[in-house]
Image (cartoon, rainbow, N blue to C red):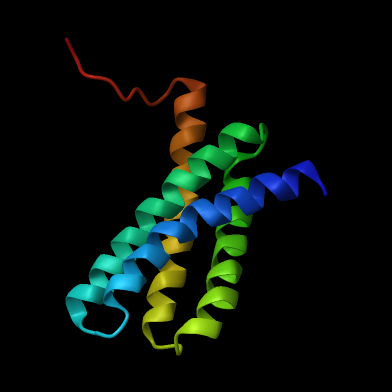
Length: 122
């Protein structure tokens, strides 16, 4: 298996595990707070996994973040289509995963260049 594909699949799993745990507890209710919280969860988990993927694949961080986000969403659709019916909420999940992936990879890129410092001012 291609080493890059392994890294992308690991990032996709890292994105989807918190989403699946969240849905395991709340899959029966579909209300607005659940939709908003699932968007935030998708955004955060995708940003974290895109930072990890961008760190492991040097070069174009934004490209690797977008590819990671697409693979994450494909994995999400393939696994949840077997378990849960699809809803309008899936568009919000796609949006959260894509925006989180782009922002996470951009944060890593800025931090690697030294333009973004994430530390406490003394």
